[in-house]
Amino acid sequence: MLKPTEVLEKDFLDTRCMLLEIAAMLDRLDAAARREQTPAAAEDPRLQQIHQALQLLTERETTADRVERLLHLFSEKD
Image (cartoon, rainbow, N blue to C red; front, top):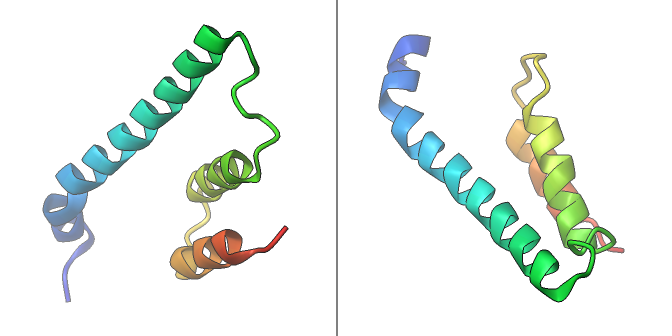
């Protein structure tokens, strides 16, 4: 079993990379919306799911079911 600091040491750079990829995608979406002079797909359920997922991940309460909750969120049918 890894210690908390060992988990961070092992996974920090990969996690940072994934977060940067998310930020880049959102920046591309905003840039496309500016070019088209339209809202950034605010009503698109996929974008709403991304925002809900980010909100879920920023909750400070420690839980062991984040992955399960995200899987449930992305499996919801509209």
